[in-house]
Image 1 (spheres, rainbow, N blue to C red):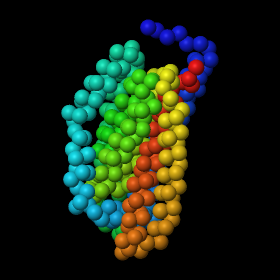
Image 2 (tube, rainbow, N blue to C red):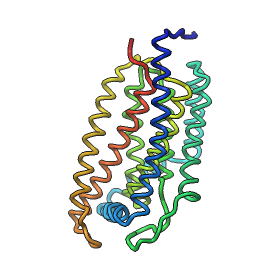
Image 3 (cartoon, rainbow, N blue to C red):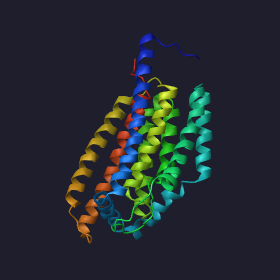
Image 4 (cartoon, rainbow, N blue to C red):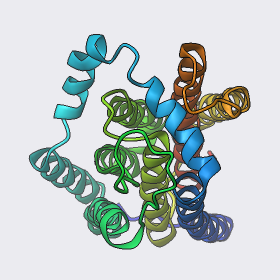
Length: 284
């Protein structure tokens, strides 16, 4: 059934489309900023590397669980999600969204590969302890994030409040698993989240928001509080470990790694919140 929008709803939709487009541009700028600071500056590389070194603690015990999370990410998994998400969008008669879901997943993953291998580079500043080549953004995190936000975009409005935090948790688990296994640094994961978020916001700018039937506001509060609180914790951990030398203590490594993990979840919470809010109209 075709929905007839009131003048006020059309104005609200237009505003949300504009905000979504502006936030997408901001996400793109943030990706470049993360790369510039954490990859091309000595201070950024040092902060990232202390956390990366800390990820080695307990890696053997965690490997079985983290690998199980990472094994989910695959090409067949992506195809299944795209097909199912597109089918849901078609059943809801959201024709543009049906096209947009595949575009978001494909564009986000293609962007990550182009940035990692063709655009960004990692200068040798004599700091890196681990992979010397550029690893930003994280491919696994991009896959998980694009899947999570694709599901959020097509989910019926009454379920979006539940899908949003679940998408954030799944993406966060994948990103932190790549960190725990030593595949990626925290900045790689954050950049991947921002890439996916930018494309999801662009999709909202094109397709427009949906009615907020479920308790979206409650989910928004949870994501907002988690994001702000996590960002503060990550900042404190960063300040506590910024003076670590080339051979950090165990405590410094744990604080840095813990703070980086919390920081990843903070960015994810705020990014998911942005997509959730601009993608839903106020409840009538």
